[in-house]
Image (cartoon, rainbow, N blue to C red; front, side, top):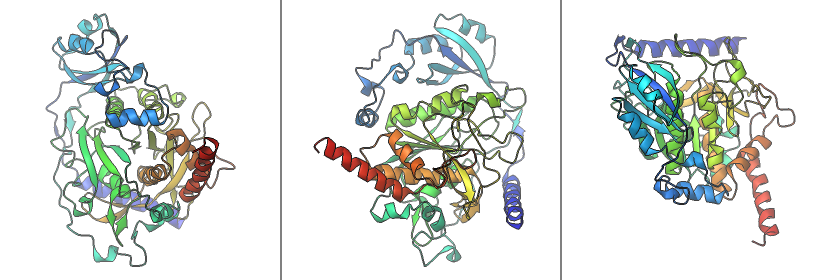
Length: 476
C-alpha cells in the first residue's frame, strides 16, 4: 500500500508541476473554424499506378515490402489529385489526405460549403472531426534547459546509468553486447511535441532524419511544443555513458507531431493516420505511438467499448494496416486502468501491432495501465515493460522519473528495432511473434499483462535458430 501511495503521490505532483508551467488561456484566433473528413468513392482517374510505386513511395519503402513479400494494393495509391482539386475549388483549405482510407481533410470557416462538397460525384460522405475551441492554452513556448546532466545522475557501476533496469529487465543489453543497437533501422515517433530536442546536448548524437507537423494550425516549431515526445524519444535514442543509454541509440528517427494539445477531438485520428502513412512513405521500419483516444471534448461523439475490435474506429483501422505495409507498430496501452473506462485506448486495439502495458520496477502490474481484451477476444496488451515509474529525460534536459504506458512502449520499440537489426530476414509479423513468444506469461496470457515481460535475448536466440534452419532448408 505504501508503494501505491508513493506512486500516486508522484503522479499527482508531476501533474501539478506541469499545470503550473501552462500559460493562461487566450482567445483562439482560429475560431470559428471547422474540419471535416471527406470520404471519397474511388481512386479512378489517377495518374498513379501500382506498376510505378516510386512515384509515391520512397525506394526504401518499396524495398521493405519486397523483402517481406508484401504486394502493393489500392490503399497504397494516393488520393486522386483531380478529386482533391475539385474539393479545393470550393473555397476550402485542404489540410491533407489519407491514401489508406481514401479521405481528404478539409478546413473551412463557413459550413455552408458542405452542401456543395456533398454534391461532388466522387464524395461518399462528410464527417465533422474538429471545431475550433473558443480559447486555448498556448503550447509553443520556449523553456530553459540544462546544458549537462547532474553529477548525482551518474552511475559508475553501469554504462546505462539511470536507465539500467529498464533494459536489463528485458535482457536487451545482450543485444547491445553484440553491437545490435538499432543501426540501420528507422523509427517514426508519433507524438504531441519534442520540446528542446534540438537544443539539449544529450540529443546531439541522435540521428534525426527529419520532422513533420500534421496538426492544424501548425506550430512554429515542434521543438517548442510539449515535452511528452522528448521523454519518449529519450528512452530510445540518448547515449550518454554512465548517465543514460536508451534502447536503440544507433537507430535513425523521424519526429512526427500528430497530437493537438489544445483539445481532444476526432481529427487527431486523421493526423495520426497521415503521420503513419508518411512514415511508411519515407521507409520507416517501426512506428512508436504513445498516444490513445476514447473520450473527446464536449459536443463530439466519444468512442464506445464495443468499438474495441481493431476496425470500428478510423485510427484503429489505420493502425491495423501498418504491418501489411511491412512496418511494426508499437502502441501504448493507455493509462485508463484506474478510471471509469479501464480498457485500452484506441488504437491499442489494432490488429498485428505490439500493444504495451506498464509494470513497476518489481515487475508487478501498474494499476493505471489499461487492460484488455479486445471486443473480439484478442489478448491485449501484448506485453509489458517498466513504466511505473520509467526513467526519462525531460524537455528541461534533466534525468527524471515519470509514469505511464507512454514510456513503456518506446522502451520496447527500441529493443524491437535492435532485434530486427539482428534478424533482418524476418518479417514484421515474425518479429512481433518472437517478442510475444518470450514473454514471462506466455503460457497463460491474460488481459492484464498479456504475454508478460519479454526476453529480447531469448527472442534473438530463437529467431537465430529459426533463420539458420530456414537457410539450411533453402540451400543457403
